[in-house]
Image (cartoon, rainbow, N blue to C red):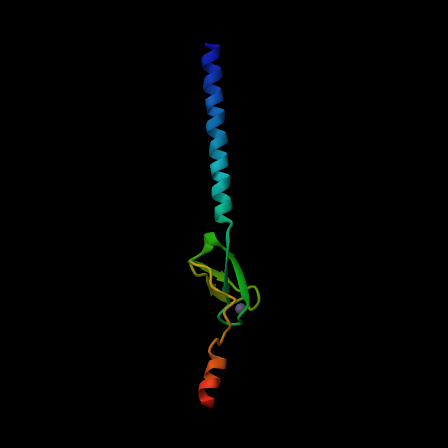
Length: 91
Ligand SMILES: [Zn+2]
């Protein structure tokens, strides 16, 4: 009987431990951050991936901000074709 209880408690502890590990892994996944740029002031804004698709607030101009479901490329210049356009105008 004692042996049975020991196995029961032991397996219970293993299940709880596995569950906590899984929850921890899941929470770190949710703590991933996405980036976007404020449409009003061009401020780079970081937001939790869990909030993607919702609404946030720009920390700089305090305006409501749409949080895209995918991270936005921020390295892209605002006007990437400016140099090319100038070259085209010259020729
Ligand atoms: Zn802003």
